[in-house]
Length: 165
Image: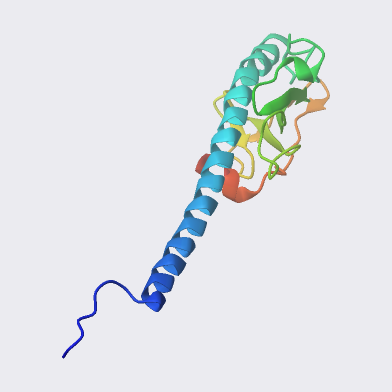
C-alpha cells in the first residue's frame, strides 16, 4: 500500500513564511523612504513661496533682503508653516526651510536651504539643498549683503534629485 502525500510539509511552509517576511521588510523600508520624501516635498513648495518676495526685494532695493521683514514678510519665521514644515526663514536672501510638525522623526528639525545666485543675464537662479552651484553664476549680493550657501541637514536620500549633486 502506497501512501500519497497531500499538502505541504512544515519545512516548506516555514520557507514560504520566511520569504514573505523578507519581502515585507523590504516593502516597509521602501515605503518609509517614500513617505519621508513626500514630506520633504512640502519643504520645496513652502520654499518656492518665499522665493518671490526675495526676488521682489532684490529688484526693488538692489540687495538681497537681510531677513523676512526686509523681504516684505512677517517677522516671525513660524508664521509660514505647514503640516510638515515648522518655519520658513530668510537670511541674507537665502530661504531656509525647517522640517517640523507632523514630519517623520528621520527629518524632524532638519533644514533645507535655497540659495540665490545672479546669472550673467541679470536673472536670479536658485541652488536647492546639496545641488551644485548654477554654472556661470555668482552669489546674490548688493548693498553690503551677500547670500551664503548653507548645506542641508536632511539626508541626501530624502532630497529630490534636483536638490542633490
